[in-house]
Length: 337
Image (cartoon, rainbow, N blue to C red; front, side, top):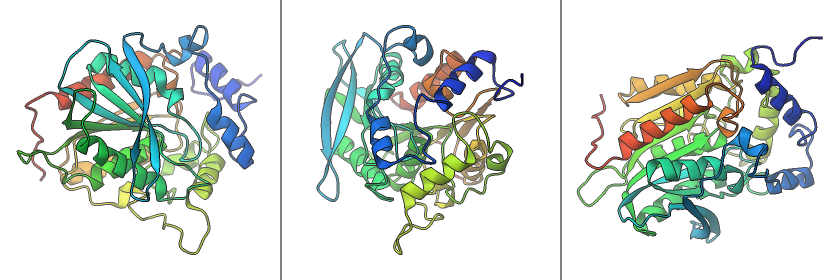
């Protein structure tokens, strides 16, 4: 019998087969009811599930808040704060994945609580509005406005002059857009507020021009038909729909001069692998410091299941190390070419 998803480790192939065959409705033919049910789903945080997703840190408090955005809406926030008392912690603003359609902040408790603990930082996960109820560019505007609000409204003793943006997949897309749109946000001393952007298998080109989409069209977790379905929900087909090449949805086509240094992590078996690699090339060409790691034998979504792959610990260590380095006090951004 042919093993599904050749190239994956046996455990990764088993878990992704379960996810792709019954654990959730495919976005390709999902109804709005299916989409809302998928958003509401939260996996247990105890074993054996935590062996796959990672543990939720017991040294971090998790609570809720909200932030206003330009159209008057209040966007829910999920705060992760280390329990030890200390002022002046840096901030990581996290944007979850899910194709701008699915996903939730609560599903990212293992990752976000781990970042808060390991970085000794305040992590804020943003429950931005999603499609199809809210088409593009609502998610981008929510991400930009919430990040600016966090800077302007320090809470929990955080040093909001030291912010990193981080996200996976659609969240990586939003992080890159925020880094572009808020590159000129400065401290009283004129230093950039956005210190770093950590982009985990980011979607950067909604035209779907990356060669890896055809190479891994039938990949694990994410396929070409799913990418098209997510994009259709996100952009819609109205006469005033945002163009696929507009930087507010496709950061690959934006002006990247002077944006924050970046870490880009890609999955070699991911249809949108080349979205990340191509964006890294654009950043380098503009003189932006960038570290790129393409992780072998893993699919899209590997950051959410660190216990399944051999590189789970390595990729998390790289993420924490890069964020810690750039959020440290006294670190100045390298000048652009």
